[in-house]
Amino acid sequence: MRFYHTIKHLGDNELVFAKGVHPHSYMQSRQQFEYTALLFIEAFHDMHNDKGLELTDYDRAQRT
Image (cartoon, rainbow, N blue to C red; front, side, top):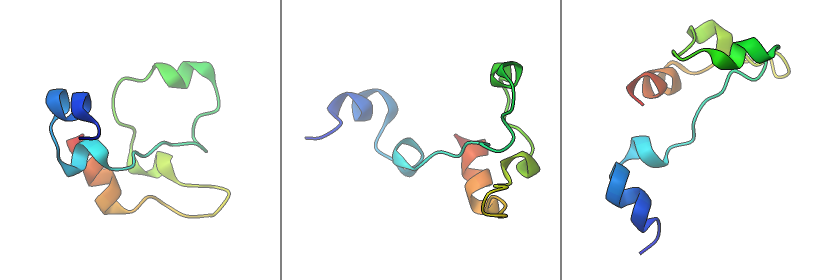
């Protein structure tokens, strides 16, 4: 079985194995990496591709 320890400790569900989100364009200093709460959805806007984060992905990040 693959990911035995992951499944044992975290379960075998969509939230465990789904790709995470990261506010790459927003993170501009070391201090921003100290945040412990999920940032607002606008912080996840990708400046390079001029795309915002899908609401479904943000909802999943909140549940995670």
